Length: 462
Image 1 (tube, rainbow, N blue to C red):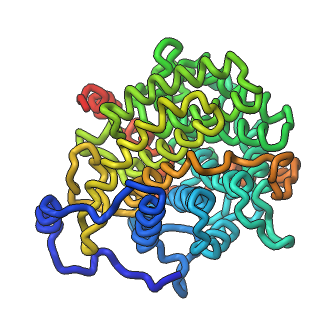
Image 2: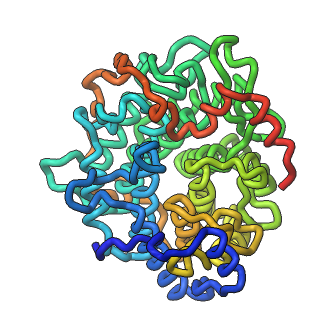
């Protein structure tokens, strides 16, 4: 990997940088396949300037954090490596494969299930789920297999799934479903949310398609039915709401919407649609999710995070969501080709807006978050770069192969019993610090502290 360069090295104020950026033209182009690949390569480089895990004395796999040690929680490292695995598959650029391999293997944890003990105090089902989905992408995207004495990608994905399918995680409150947090002592353990169940559903759907094992598809069915029955998925509009506390059986639902909730379910549904050879029920679900998602999160063809963007209340975690929306929607077009005509033009318009505002920072090409504004917003970070990268590289989908399976090109070795060593994190009671109270559940700490503030975000027009 090239030497690290700090994007904050120039001695200019944020305000001056933002003002200067407004007069600049983005150096990026998406006008051709070659231009998309070049732009993507530069965005990868800029994103990885926030990563220090390849430096002596630093921890491989994670971005600097968690707060107050740095801006980023453990889950975002998994999200970044998942993005880079897609980057490798879609562009053919293997420049960063050694870093990806090192990071994904270093963080597997003591039981090889992406639950390392040193992150237990902030470990959510969704946090673990993002690492599991990254491992699944490695299996599906023909990422180089690890050495034979190391955990294999498919086995890692199965280990995450198996720990999350454990009876310890699916209690009777609210009629089932995963809680946000894994350890019972963690703040947020009393909350069941869509992203935790969405990661589990997504992983189950993908494992069903990859392996053909009915256990995974049965769990996908069960999870969808629970989400639908409890009302986290609106039975009319297909809106997916954030979640609810368990103290009144999840009857008081926080109806904040986030793009990654829609996208993680839509992609999982597309995998089930593909796995079932175009089953009409899964098609109806996919159509409902896409209609709502395109109209809600891509108004005027540009990605907008409706619950926080206009109000300026997006957290560091939320700055990544548009990237997942682009990546997962683009994969849908491979699994359900009839959707391509609708989805791809919108993703292109959004990607164009994303790179247009990448004119900031010390390098004069760093990306902000408010794509629809057309100008750099004065703030950059790993999440903003990751999202712009995802939007750009996703445009390569039409020329890329669909995710492979065991019977169609997949080489990753599986272990259906992986993760069976016990759900140790469930039993941890380590004291919780302020820095431990958030993960990829994102909104929940705000829900618990000020529900009124969250609901007011939903009334802010885009």
